[in-house]
Amino acid sequence: MLNPVTDAINADELIKLALKEDIFNEDVSTNAVIDGYVLGSVQLICKQDGVICGLSVFERTFKILDASTRFEFFAKDGDRVKKGQLVAEITGDIRVLLSGERTALNFLQRMSGIATYTAEVVSLLKGSKTKLLDTRKTTPNMRLFEKYAVKVGGGNNHRYNLSDGILLKDNHIGAAGGVKQAVARAKEYASFVRKIEVEVENLEMCREAVEAGADIIMLDNMSPEEMKKAVGLIGGRAVTECSGNVTRENIKNIIDTGVDFVSSGALTHSAPILDLSLKNLHSVSGK
Figure 1: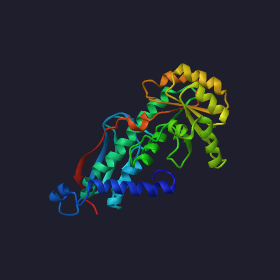
Figure 2: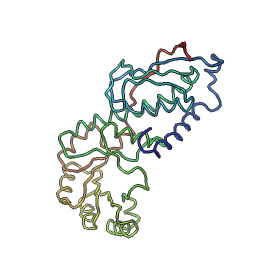
Figure 3: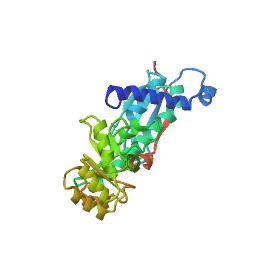
Figure 4: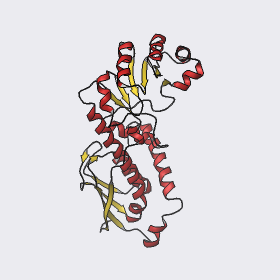
């Protein structure tokens, strides 16, 4: 499926939940017009230019309904596709092709949209040292797929979930009583192999984070001028990341600040879908 074996297992569970959401008891429309097995074929057509992503999820959606469903793909994840391009042909029980259509397309369109948007943003950073990161601002139960799509689009993944890394944000800092106290407690609690990232909102907090020994400093909602000063203040003593309403429209303002990473929630929460469609369904002769 996606990559590690555990991802494939988790993906299956999530795909099954999506199918259950769409086929609670039965597909009454399909069952009303088709009362038995009919072998059929349908084409997956791209209706926009973009980056295709999620073909294995698309395939798995149908195979969960019927393992005998067959696929011929004419593109792979990460390929740039054009409007009108034939991406795949699917052959199987017409009832399965009809019942799985919307769920399979929902996954594929969403993931392809994120990959396309990410690729656009990555292209804007070309020539700079700054690398693009996603965030945890994902659709509930879609994080596995959405973060995979970011990677296919050329971006990088930030932490996957709250168990994956330490990021001390404003409310953590407030609860601990300050930057120094928050970092000290994190160092005491966490294993020495875990890095500690601290979100700062101004140069004073940035100075405190450096002095406290933070491994990564996130410059949150700072102006480009403030970010330049913060990067100079840090002076290579910590990895730098900037965040805060970063989109493809304004990311060019960040290139000259010298930050190592830029994180953008827009990659997953604001990317439009890539329009794809299943067309030309027809019965075929065969076993």
